[in-house]
Image 1 (tube, rainbow over the protein chains, first blue to last red):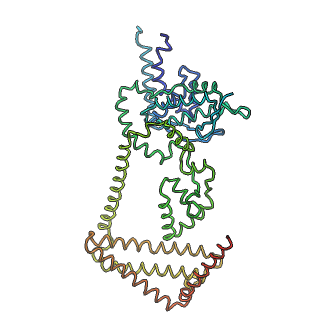
Image 2 (cartoon, rainbow over the protein chains, first blue to last red):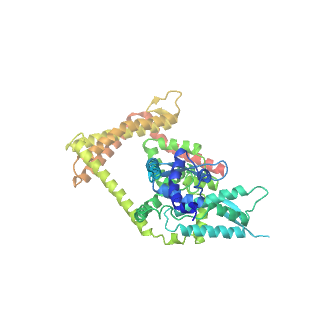
Image 3 (cartoon, rainbow over the protein chains, first blue to last red):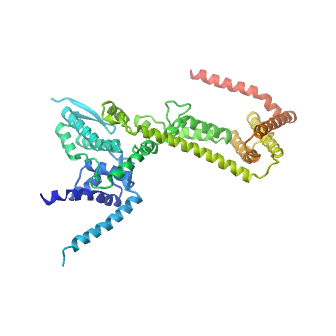
Length: 108
Length: 388
């Protein structure tokens, strides 16, 4: 089993965290999110992202508004709610702790 | 040579090769099955369809009008398989979350179309279908998702009491655009323009589960609860209103005396107002007072409405205070009401009689009413005939 395969579960779990971070920076629509992720280890597809976004919206982490696009039908632009920002802050903190633990353990 | 099938994704038509159509259909069916039980299933599916549509659009050009099977497969591979509920397996509290999600789902399902989430942006249009005059009320009703009759009633009441309803209506009839294209009509009521698409899907049996929607009972229960709450609110409001006036009514039990006096004043104000209005329309003067030269008649009429509102408003409130102040609802109430109504009528009749007898202008005005009505009817008739 390659490292890549082994960590697929971790990547999946972290995806929500990364999506929060992307949306926190600016209002984005799904293609923007996919593009930003595509260059990373977290490259994903619409089939994964849409259900994730709708779950996050149901949890009150984000919201969207319809915006006209210059070509084609209106698009959903996502943005974070205060609850989403709070969650992002907490996750960042927790992530820092995990990082510290990873570096510290096993060192003499 | 391949057969081409045209499909509708997100309100746009895309011609696909038959093989591509089958692949897309299989993909969407799998997606629907994967999302079974997900409260946002329809929304996710329409998002997915929209995304596929955008990818198809990028493939088409003026000299290339059909999406090939190969291309459909590439697009579907790019979309990737639908992940049922990310985080569900990783979350130990998934059972709890699922349960709470389900109970809130009826509320969300009922409220979503009203708030306009899940649909394209909503705009205010005039809607001609089923309109009475210019479709203003119809458009507002569709925009706010309420019964057009209520909106019409509100306009009529505004016109009667403050005279503003008519003005607002005329302005809106001029300013608000009319919904002409199907997209505009859809935007007027906030329905997604893919509504036909949903109907098609329902017919094709895409959403088998929709028929046996497990929350039908829960939805009905939600509706019932909503109604009950509204009723409780109305009762509460009525109660508050009543207890407020029994406590704060400016004058206490001797209402039997105050009420008729207030009623007299109110009646006098109303009669005066009606007389002024009639004389204005008939002779162009307000009870014998000529208007300043640069004030058009309709402005004067509007001012009269407002003046009446200012004078009659406090009187009305005071009378209501007397009703509420006359104690708890009981056998005395009908008597109080009846007495009051009689006094009101008597005062109104007396004043009208006095007015007609002592002010020649008013008498002339009253006498000219039948002629005026006749003339107006004639005008309408000629206009109608000319139109035909």
